[in-house]
Amino acid sequence: MSFFGLQKERDVVPEELIPRKVAPQVSAAAATLQTFDFELPTDHFIHQILIEIGEDTNTGVDYKGTLADDLTDISLILNGNRYVKDMTAPMSKQLSIMNKNVMSTGFYALYLTDPKIPAAKPLPAWLFSSIILRLKDNAPAATNYHHIHVTCVQSKRKEIAGNWPLLEEKYLRYKKYGANTGWQDYDHERAYAVLGYLYCMDDNATLSNTIFDKLRVISQGPDGEQRPYEEQWISQLRELDKIEYQSALADGFVAVEFPAGLPTFKYSSLMSQLNIPSAGTNAGLKVLERYVL
Image (cartoon, rainbow, N blue to C red; front, side, top):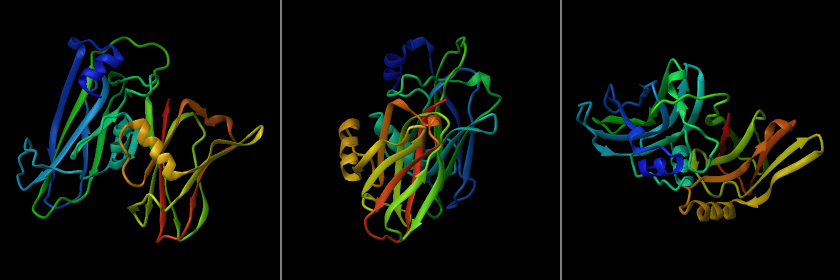
C-alpha cells in the first residue's frame, strides 16, 4: 500500500505518517547465504514493512547494488517466539499482487494493515519487547554481497482498547507426494476463521501450474461432510485470480479466499485435496493460511 493509499484507506493524516528507515545490513561474506535479523522500532503503529535487496561487490552498508529477487524466506517475530508472518519470499510477492501492489524486482512487502481485509489492524509495536524481521537469502553471485534496506511505514501511537487483532500469515508444512497420482490430502489448522489459502505448487522444487490440475476443500463437522470449496480446475481458479487481482499470480501459485471468514474451529477435520493427473518427479505443496487473530 502506498503512502497515499494508507492515508486514504485507513484515515491516517499526513502529519501522523512516519516512514522509518531501519539500519541497513550487508552480507558478512561474499557468495554466501545468510540469515539477517532486523530489529524493528517498538514505539508506534506499524502498517507495512518494505524490503529492498540488491547485490554487488561493494561492501559499503549504505550501498544498494543491482536489485534482485534473492530472498527465500521472510518472518516477523514478536517477543522472540510469536510468529505473525512466516512465509517464503515468493509468497510475499503474491500477496502484493493480491493487493494490486505488484512489487518490482528486488522489492518485497509485509502487510499488517491490508487493503482487502478491513479487520486487520496495524501492529501496536510498543506492546512488545522485541520485533524481529528475519530474512533468509540465497547465495549471491561470486564475489558479490547482498545489501538489504528496510523501511517501516508507521503512524503515531494511539490508545487502544480490548482485543486488537493482527493479520497472521503462515505456512506450517511443506508436504511432498513423490510420484503419486490422484487426489492428495493437505491438512489445515482449525483454530480461527481463515480468510484464504495461498497454494504454492511445485514438481521437484520447480514451481508448476500443471503438477496438480484440480482443487477442493473438504471439512467434517457435526452435520457431516461439507465442501467449503467445491472441486475446481486450477487453471480456471488462476484465471479468476487474474481477473480479481488485475495481474496474474506467478507460476505455481493459486489463491482461494473466504472474505467472510471460514470458521475452521467448527470442524473436526479440514483439508485441501489436490489432484495429480500424471506422475511428476516429486510433487510438493505449501499452503499459506491467512487469518486475523
